[in-house]
Image 1 (cartoon, rainbow, N blue to C red):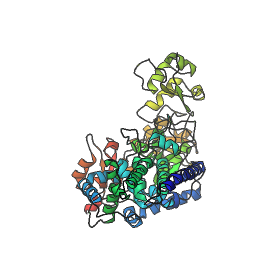
Image 2 (cartoon, rainbow, N blue to C red; image 1 turned 135 degrees about the vertical axis):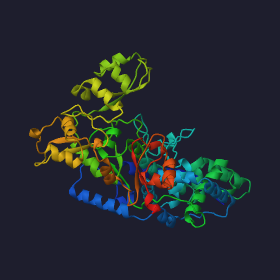
Image 3 (cartoon, helix red, strand yellow; image 1 turned 135 degrees about the horizontal axis):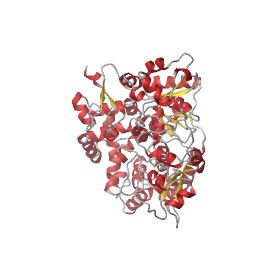
Image 4 (tube, one colour; image 1 turned 60 degrees about the vertical axis):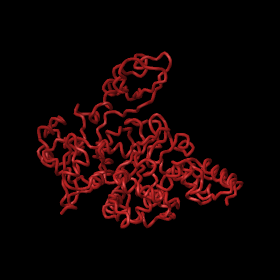
Length: 539
């Protein structure tokens, strides 16, 4: 039987300890090694030769790593109460809804290693890695009808109390890196609050520690048992805890509960880098050589594709794309630096007066903020480039750039816009237009027109754009950049109306295998994009 007086005092002590711990975590300027944090971090977007070698070693380790699911089941520490009727009921539900598990596991793939390392760092049970499957199906864009957001379904007030930033530009509840640290800190607190009773702690994560404590007190008053299974809690909470335990049972016993979980490598997949330029996610995707939708999926915390200049922002990338991103970023031919600011419409403001105030135009403001008319309401939020940005180029040109369908980077020598799949190349001493065009499989005349070049002005060290999105042999480039392609696999070009399920049926493979090989789902498919179909398994 629990001592409620001890609980009441313990609550405030542990809350204080937790707040101090969170403050220390937030205030830290650097992170521990990848083995402790689960993610590579780069404070500056410049790679030394030593850092490049370490990155190459990390990529090799990732490609050769064991299956994380096998490691995870060995790490489980909680009793799973497999014989409990409530747990058995949830096991049956999951076995009858295996597509839900496959979708969740595919979404979780980029983050599982990171989250497991964060769990181990705090000496928490490995079962918590499965909790976002219950909360959100590992969907970082999940939003409940009561306002909980992200894979951990944090409420706004709870997130704020845990130090998670939420503003016009960014919602840290959707940021998997930030929200995971906050959620696990909160679970650590709940575990301490309930003196190590994880069933109570999990129930409290769902319904609040006050409700769990009230249920315990009620049973004590009525002379009833105080174990979790006897507590008078809501049906949602009574299903919530057994759901997590049921998942752990299924994963712990693959022979007894045969389901397909796409393999996930037990090594760091993600890297976090702080660019020294305020670039949009579209520009970052181009420089990193990844699909724009995938960039959004890896960086779901940003409310807008443009970046705020008020605070530094950290970009999440696959480790295999870090070197390409840093090198392209260093060579990017920006003609100006756009510093976006956030303006709230005041009483008496009009589009004309705001445009005049910020040295831009009314039509540019409408286009950038997707306004259907000239009418604006008091309190409306508008996105405007700073005056410093406006001074270097015409307002109309700057304002329309972020809203185009293609990534537009202003060039010093030409009006050509850098396309997804293009390459930024530094001319070497013996290069000619012909040799460069041949090397990248592009048309010589196209290369010349894009950069307004002739052989006479090919100067060593000059940076030019190679329009490799129009290369005559794009398959070669695609194969070299594909993460998971193996001998016997197929490269498939997505057609209009395609879904992962249709493609899987066409090639007689499992949809989950395609999702994992490309870290994609139906929402991220783009017509013309090439997918790896893991047909090597059929041979």
